[in-house]
Length: 163
Ligand code: AMP
Image (cartoon, rainbow, N blue to C red; front, side, top):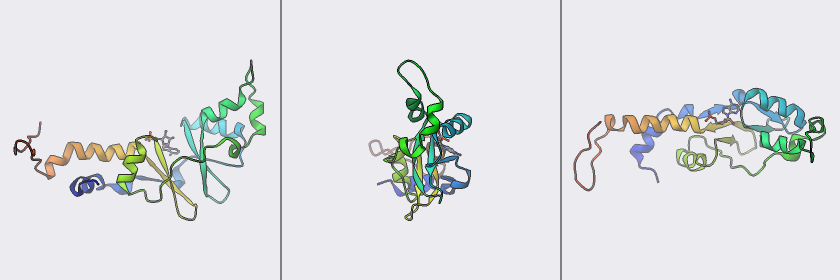
């Protein structure tokens, strides 16, 4: 459980947690890996969301998942990527969330993931929550907490001073 005062400060700007689907780069599961390789290289993200034609979330695709497919024993075959679909190599077991504003769950899952896909109950892709946005909230908390609260040590019963 997160202390309610801390939770209050963490979620003060919670509307910023969600990066909406409309501005999140994606590839389709039916795209071939050649296309996905171009997209991933261009946007410079290491991992990208995979959707189907109806805007439903299907998984995640990373550059290593693609490059692994083009390695032959002693050469690299980029053309081979044209015959492999994104759906054939994407990751489908990455954690997803339904509520971007559940800060406790966000903090827990973002420890191991750089971002979390937000997926509605019907499978619609809503957007992502990124480590960066959560870090901004944590930054606000650690720097501004003592402007809103007196922090008293349980040991000394002394109010800690702002440095
Ligand atoms: P950040 O915390 O902003 O560095 O984002 C973490 C990760 O989330 C990035 O490395 C990307 O994989 C993903 N990401 C962030 N913003 C976008 C976006 N607009 N479109 C697609 N992926 C994104």
